[in-house]
Length: 201
Image (cartoon, rainbow, N blue to C red; front, side, top):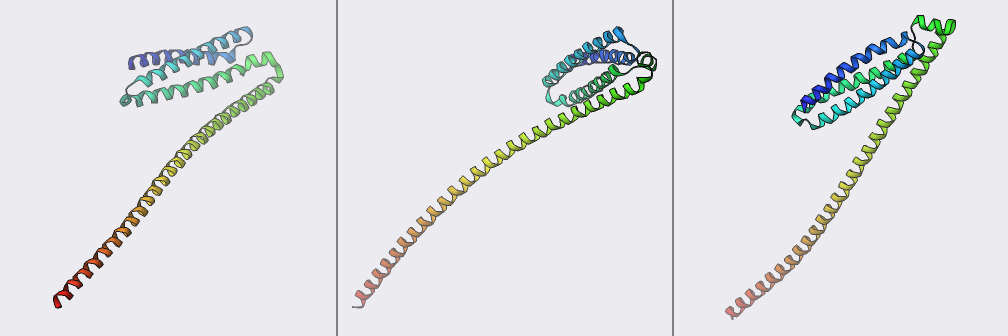
C-alpha cells in the first residue's frame, strides 16, 4: 500500500510543479491564450484533487502503527493544494503591467484593485462558512455527549433506587429477625424461671 502512496506522491509533485509554472504565466497573457491556459490549469487541479482522494484512501489502508507518518504527509499536500487554488484564483484576475496597460489603459490600477478586493471578500466569506460548519459540528457533537451523559445519569439513578429498595427490604428483614429473637429470648427466660421455681418448691 505504501508503494502506491509514494507513486501518487511522485505524480502529485510533477503535476503541482507544472501547475505552479503555468499559474505564474497566466497574468502575462490575455485573450484566448489566457483562457486556454486557465482551462488547462483548472483541469490539472481537478487531477490533483483526484490524486489526493486516492492518497487519502491509501492512508486508511496502511497499518495503524505506520499511518501517522503518511497522514502528516497527506496533510501537507492538502495545504499545498489549498495554496495552489488561491494562487490560481489570483492569477485569473491578475495581469502583468504590460498586459494591463494594453487592455485597460489608465483605469488598469483601479480595476485591479477592485478585483483584488472582490477576491479578498470571497475568500473571507469562504473562511466564515468553514468556521460556521465547524461550529455546527461541535454543537452536534456536544449535543450527543450531553445525551449520553443524561442516559448514564438515568441509568445510575435506577441503580441507586434499586439499592435503596434492597436496603429497605434488608432493614425490614433485620427488624423481623430482631423481634423473633427477642420473643425467643423472652420465652427462654420465662422457661428458665419456671424451672428454678419448681426446684425451689
